[in-house]
Length: 366
Ligand code: PMP
Image 1: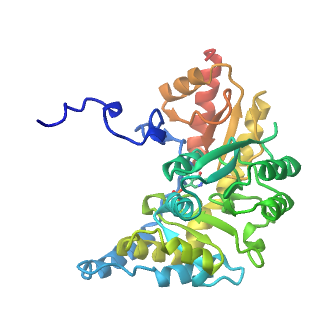
Image 2: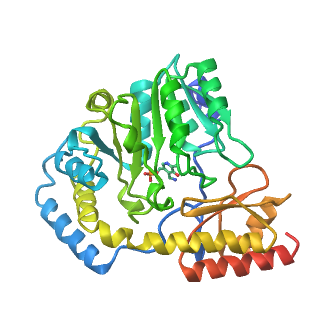
Image 3: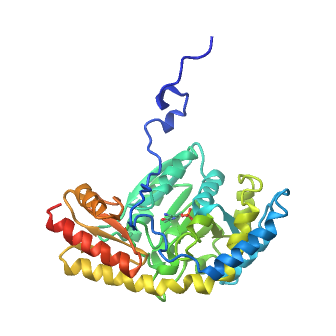
């Protein structure tokens, strides 16, 4: 006789350490103003779309073959984009920086190993950590969402984590880390240090990238993505820069042919158009700074942000505010400490809709 009918997840022989866990869950709700997943609100231009269509057409006639397994050309072009004297051997790419981070954890985490991050931060870091059967250790940020270097070093010395995550600018707080904090962490960490720079292009002019620390630090990994400033979230292309030995380690865990020919072609087109795609960054930064000023002008709290979103509050019942905004067609995100919400920066019209909805929601007493 076969096994009894499965009726729910708990009936399945799932790994014990995954029981009771929640999946990543940004709601995908079709409303007029979607300001909840930190995308760039400006779509690629028709010219870029035409180039992309041509590139896909070229690939289409070769789709009977597997793609370039090591994405050699794409990695070389990503290195050119990053600068800092990088070359393709020091760059790796995958389907979004989420996959890049998963591969890092597959290679450097795993059963019996630990990864440490400073919360509140990006929710996928602990989810990917646990998914690779790595233990997650949460260290705390300060009240201003910064990281105290002395406390960070103490936490690292106490736990001796195999992987440390730093996120700069941080999600969901927008906080950029000063270089001396990153340097202290890199010097103290016994294992790998991942600096997640998904939002780096939005940081204030003059903010140095952790890429400047790569020479002489073979255990440092800097991750980036085309999902945010590059306005290519649908493409799913993330990448990293690190010592070539790190990339050798990732080759041990990646799936063969993980990056489709279509993804590689799309990313190459995006890179060829990078000036145009990044042309919206200044507008978004200005809108971000205006949003922070407006929120504070209304007597609300808003965290300093170097990213394309703003954490704001404080609402004793943030769920009620989130719902009141949604009722007015504006989707933001319930994230971060209990009384805060996060709004991604949209177009000028979208931010006007956000301001009107928030005023309405607050007036309603939500
Ligand atoms: N890192 C951070 C800090 C993020 O906020 C995100 C996306 N929300 C990612 C990485 C992953 O982005 P993607 O997989 O689209 O590159």
